[in-house]
Length: 123
Image 1: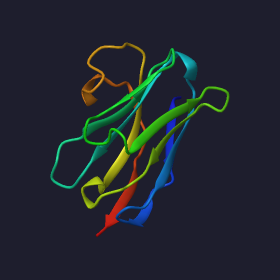
Image 2: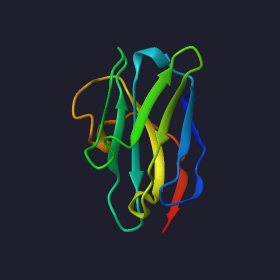
Image 3: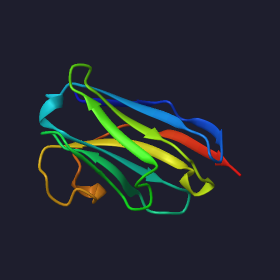
């Protein structure tokens, strides 16, 4: 069965950095679009960044220039490097996988999800 396991969350001060990892198993990793979402308390899950299956990345305007995502197909792992963190980045961060490249910012179009990892940014 498919498993996505996030790690690397924690508590960090504003301006600090964290790197999240998502290890995938049970799927042909290189064929999947791998994205990051986040969900803050009382808010909807929102798109953060995407790693296309064929290479290439993109990110939401709210994190552009601060967050960078990458993938290692040999390790079946996707990363989210987060710099210049702000208190408003506090959320549970999830990785997600899908095959088809439509509506990539819509959470309901993804096939598989990790359990999430908490990121808390203190002011």
